[in-house]
Image: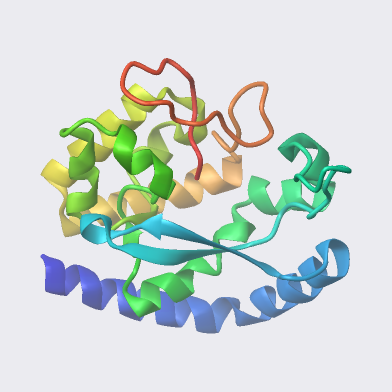
Amino acid sequence: MTAVKRAFDFTAAFFLLLFLSPVMILLTVLVRWKLGAPVFFRQKRPGLYEKPFYFLKFRTMTGEKNRAGNLLPDELRLTPFGQFLRKYSLDELPQLLNVLKGDLSLVGPRPLLMEYLELYTHEQRRRHDVKPGITGWAQVNGRNGISWERKFKYDLWYVTNQSFFLDLKILLMTVYKVFRSEGINQTGHVTAERFRGEGAKVRGGSS
C-alpha cells in the first residue's frame, strides 16, 4: 500500500502541477500584488511519525500589526481576495510541492500545529502513524465545521481503514466539496478555533 500510494501521489502531483501551472503563476502574481511579500505562507507542521516539515500555502492575510508590533486579529487581516482563495481552496495548491517532496500525501489527516502535539491523548497521536494529506476523511465530512472530537475520530478511522480505493473516494468527494465551498470556516470565525486539548468542546480546527 505504501509504495502504491507514494507512486500515485508523485504522479498525480506532478501532472496536476503541470496542468495548474498557469493558474499558480497567475495566483503568485495576484498574491504579490494584493498582499505583498512573501507570496507563500510557510509554517513548520508535524508529518509522518511527528517529523517536522515546512507546510506551504498561498498567503491569504496581510501582515498588518498594531502599535506594539503584534499581528492584528485574523478577521482584520483576511482580505476579500484571501477569502476567495480560501473559499475555493486555491491557497492549498502549493501543497502539491509538498507532495512531490514526500512530506505530504494527497490524502491523509491534515497536518495541524506543532504546539498541539503535547495536547494529544495517546490515541489521538495515532493520526501521525500515516503521512498527513492535503485532504482527508475529516475534510470531506465537515472540515472546520465539526468538533475536534469528531475530527480526530474521522482521522483515526482513516488510519485504521486506509486503502487505495478509499483515497480515490476521498479525492472525488473533495472535488465536490470544494465546488460547494463547504466547511471552510467555523461559524462565527474567519479561520478556526484553536485546539485546547482533551475535552475541548470547541468547533473546527486550524487547517
